Image (tube, rainbow, N blue to C red; front, side, top):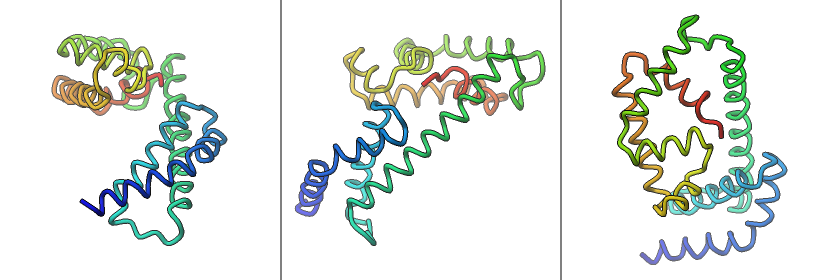
Length: 182
């Protein structure tokens, strides 16, 4: 317990000393304050979780900067890939794995499966995928915890996977790239 308290103290001290600079660094990479806040918070959380097992070859500060850098690049890469598929979907360019002319049929299957989700699960899933809300915004709007939102999204994907099992890999692409706008 004492080691955990010590780790918490060390990470809090690092947070107080480096948060603002890391946030500016992240913003310089991803050009978005909200995304940057998430990236920096996840970097500190990761450091805190790994503090006992982490063998730092440099400093914790260097670890944080490297974590923010890589998370920023990952986010930009993900947005670029998602944007490519979104643009192709909007222009009617067939997405790899979706047979020509069957996009509407796939979309109808997905919409039907989404409508079959339990009410809270469907509402949260749609707020995330259609309204482009972040977990923390959904949680605030519905007066629930972010963990509940995360659990409901996981539940939605599990149920959708079960209901759309025979076509799930392609439908997953549709859900991730065409319905998730943020």
